[in-house]
Image (spheres, helix red, strand yellow):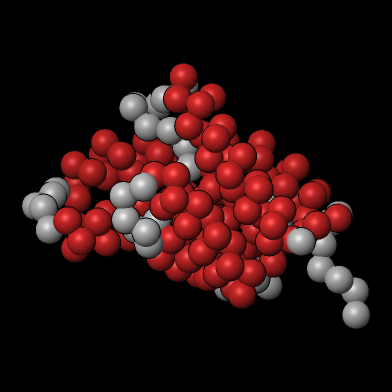
Length: 167
């Protein structure tokens, strides 16, 4: 049930990202809400859950985006795993943790998407130009949204679908 709800959350996030945030682009880019949720979920639940959230979130983007299956799934899965490793190492109630993790995760994820896309497509590209025009504005947008999303998301993980069962 938890993964069905997570999939539903990612689909809704993608719809909001594609509709509402299309009207509010920053430097021509939209935020990556799915990545934000994957990072927060991984940070709160650990690497195994982070991998699953990354896979579900990345496949959701791949299915809707429609270019190559795996172009977003693999980088988002890796990002979910790596930030899940921080679960027991950071104080989750710290105001700066969501901002800093989203900054690092956006850079990592977008760089992996760039490298994977470069290897699949085979076209020459300039990472510096991609960083300036895509990665950096997305990083800023995501980090500005993260404190507002994190508080609600953190509370929701303590209840209902996201709460770990007590054994």
